[in-house]
Figure (cartoon, rainbow, N blue to C red):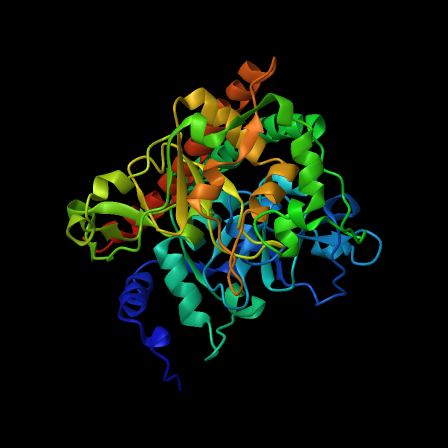
Length: 436
């Protein structure tokens, strides 16, 4: 009765044949509940007046707090929508197959999730880490699409998810995979704590005042990069004034700040090219390479290969949210990877200064300062030239502590990613071994 191609995908049909030769149980067998919340009242507000409210795209990012909206504690808070540590989340509409494992620190931040997120709560006697690793694998992804329906906007219901087959594997194997996922979640939380501590120093030392509800005027000669409101944000004027007397210009402490020109994308197998990642994939926690870029399509491709310690800035988006102005730092996972031309590379003279700048550029005031650099009408974007002329605070007595915290974050966050990928690949390898 189905005419859509995803239902008849050759890979999932081959996998179904494999499953029929091995015992399995429906996901519902392992769970105490699989559910979505009703669509409640949404009243968004400032972070200090609300709690993080995650969409199905936010849940898979490295740091949801950087891109999510905040729900009013007074008018929109809904306890059933809260996300609990150990939950498995998957998208209900559009983001079919995108799956996330909820670390405990999300619960500490009282994070809420939208009604477009399906919550999967595994019974305590079963291994939620193993269940997550399977659902996040390519075989779990195929199963999601097999059960999904809809034309223009694909969707899957909690009842459909409950019917997903989970192959039986040995208790020892499940424990091994679960240990990797649990350790990954622990390291991710420890890494986040380290970065939060580094960023909080700049938030406290150089706070940004909230004047969003106040109309203001500026003299014509004092207008900045254009007549747009976001180019003349007076909050940012006050923010920069706090450290202007002891500041450094980005161009004086970097070897290069650039975004590569548009280039031809020729994708190859793993053995023949450079691993490639788009700007949106850069935001994801579970970074798995799905494509490799051919050197033949890009002149001087080695100039575009990212090195550990490089700051990465997504240059396009909106000035009132999203990832425009959000800064990432290349870790061991991204070392040697090619990125989209939508990502600005900021290469510092030394790693310590890069770590200091990274913590500052993740602060509340610096994000607004970066967004103020945007230009364009339909889709605002930031240019490398404007980033080069930006000022950041000069190192102070807290310099070494900040550097150490960021270094810890990079190391632990990278280890966390590798452990999660290792767990998922173990599940995939085990299933593939059944065909040999």
